[in-house]
Image (cartoon, rainbow, N blue to C red; front, side, top):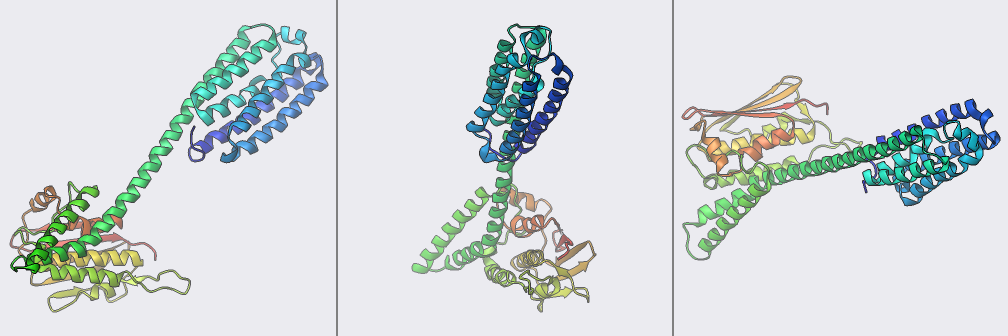
Length: 411
């Protein structure tokens, strides 16, 4: 049985509209042929009953909790009862003359409701019950009556099929939304782990590998845990088969400069707290202040003289991506780095340039084949989540330039 809500809501509204429109047609037919009925006053009473039931079903089917068997069976039973009294109200002469029955198209309402609630099978079952009852009460099978029953059967099948397709589409959409949310969370966790835990483990393994005794054993265990954790993150993330490298073209291992990775993790912890306004909402953050913490004797920062306000989450992630780029500079032998901040109104761009050894154009592709985290998660992943771009340009012997651009959102 299809789940209530979602894509089914327009279908239930369409059923309600159909009932109202078909009831209006019933009123026209009864007003036209009332003088030929055996009991015209009873015909008027039936029309009022049909109007009341139309309102009751519109209200009942509007709530997903009430779309169960009690209302469905009652709906079918009311229409069957109206069909059963139709010969007495109209009279056999009127039916023999070929006049339409009182319910006319209105009797298709339960067929549509059953089809929307349970698909083709329910729609077919309701159509067979109502079609058979309609033919039986006429006392004869005319081509018009038979065509009406067949059309009602087709309506039950088609509407039921469409309803099932709508429910399946909703289920697939929900699954896709949940998968995307889970993927984003895995990528965020992978970035945080890479920026801190993995680099610390690599540092312990590298420094302790030259020691004996318990220190050497600790280094061996740290190396095993680092490899296992890295493999786990690579397998869990959707970018596992195509993440760029955390090593430079020279093949320098991040463990050689693992202290910078640890400080990067500490910096991120500092960045997570932002100023809060009196209404409890985080106030805009000046990007210059966050990037100013990276300035040192070897890192030069050039920024506009005016404030560069960004939403706290955007500013912190952009600063963290900048820190990851500077961490790569320290690990791969760059002695100096330059940070340039450009506020272009619609976008904010941060460029990081170094005078390190650089790397070959195909180095990132080679690292991607190895499933190495680093640039993909700590830099490109962050910018993708922010709706921005990360462009990395490098030439062997000429350093590397990383350009981070994020769209400006009103804080």
